[in-house]
Length: 121
Image (cartoon, rainbow, N blue to C red; front, side, top):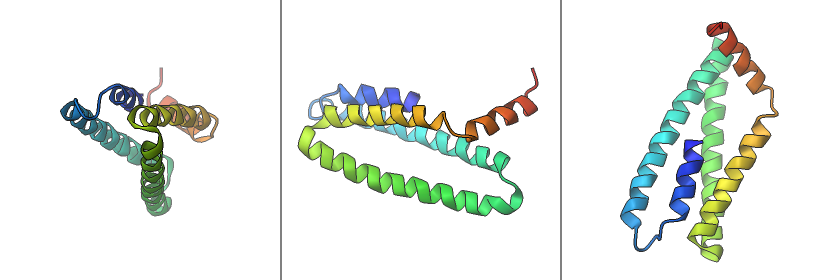
């Protein structure tokens, strides 16, 4: 959620007048993204057995690179046509949609089972 909130904050900055503040927020977003990457790596290490970890790691890297290329390209096109605020608010709505859709997948059941097994109440 921190990632999404930072994106919303950046949408309300004026890119020409408050560029330095936006750069600082981008640095914070990069830090949040790197901690998310570590969490995802830890998750697939827990979910996959030793033989599956190589394909799990390469799949994660492929998915992240594809998302960066496709997402960045689409956002640049949108920025060209709609401007700064509309682009970042669209990114925020896409993030919310991803969270809603991802809650329906089985991986969250596996995460719950791991959390319950490793942290009994």
